[in-house]
Length: 280
Image (cartoon, rainbow, N blue to C red; front, side, top):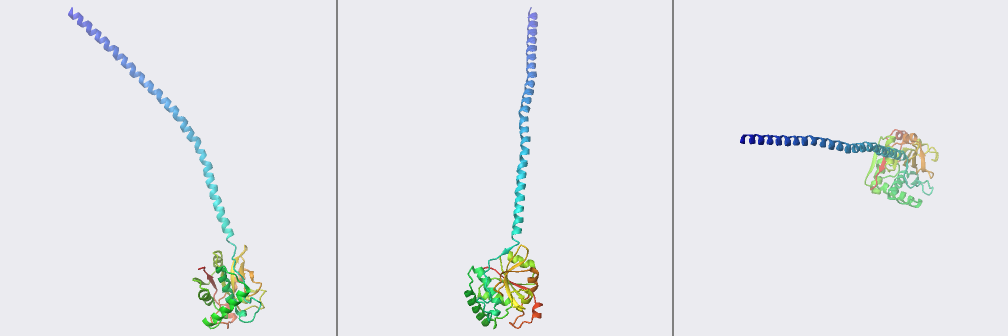
């Protein structure tokens, strides 16, 4: 009896064990199905984000195009600036070396003095009337006679000394054996140039012919066509007088030192020089 009861209890326990084991297995099998569903939902929610990113990338193209346009505009502006700066006309005041049309001495030989005072008045932003010019020329001649022993036909170096010692400019350069481009560069930098010249080589029809052997004048600008704009104090018609570059450049020659005893042949073979004054 007891043995039969023991067998029944064992059978009941085995049945219960099998029942619960089967139930646990069903639960484990269902959980992966739930995970698969979550993965599908996650993938579905991610796809629109990728799609939106793809749609935004073309929007970058107009930005790139806009930047390129700005660069082109800048380049164009630089080119326009270059074109504009190839011509200039500095506002250098003018005076003839004979302010009241009196061509007696010292005015006959006052080209260096007049060129110097025109540049000085330009930097001083001062007025230059015939009365002022006459007095300045007379004062300069007196100073030169005391300093050099003469006033006629001063060289580029002597004229530079006038600008430094008389007009008190701190920097005055005398440049020799330069090119046409060197002349233009100084003008485009805003600096008028004083040049010594073989006067008759200038071929200025307003000079009393055949023209002065030695002359000095101011170059103050360049035209669109590359001609030089001058204040040629050797004539009352010298304000904004235009010289062709080849004629002007060929005529530039410094005087031999020593005053008014100049031989034209020696002058025409002498070095080219220009005087450049810098503002204080």
